[in-house]
Image (cartoon, rainbow, N blue to C red; front, side, top):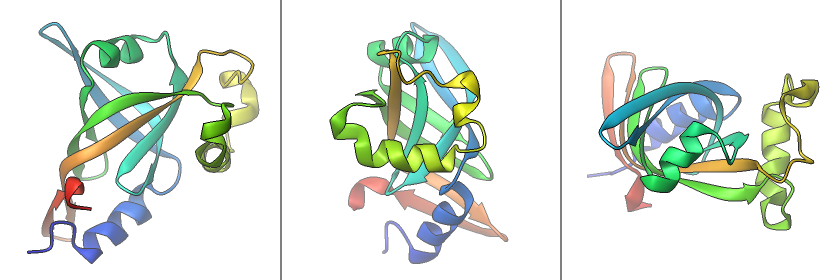
Length: 143
């Protein structure tokens, strides 16, 4: 059995390999929280530009397990703060995010001078994507 069918990979890249709206759910204590973020998908992970002191990042520090949902897709993953968007180790992904989010990135929403402006990576573990009546169960960890 293919744990990540080629067609599912193609659908993931087509739907999410650009600026896309994604619901991200976290938990604090026993209370769930969900919000919509701009996200970019690549190689089994979603990337988000956010602020290290935001509620979602505080919740992820406490419990990195997250769930995501968007465009006939749901999944679980682990959220992690990759650090400042301008950190040298983030140069390659930051360039891709600036390009993907170019329609709004420079409009004052993102302050790269703020050391708390960070990249959230959500490494996916498992998910389900639906396309034209076909369900694809995906094990992202089998990569």
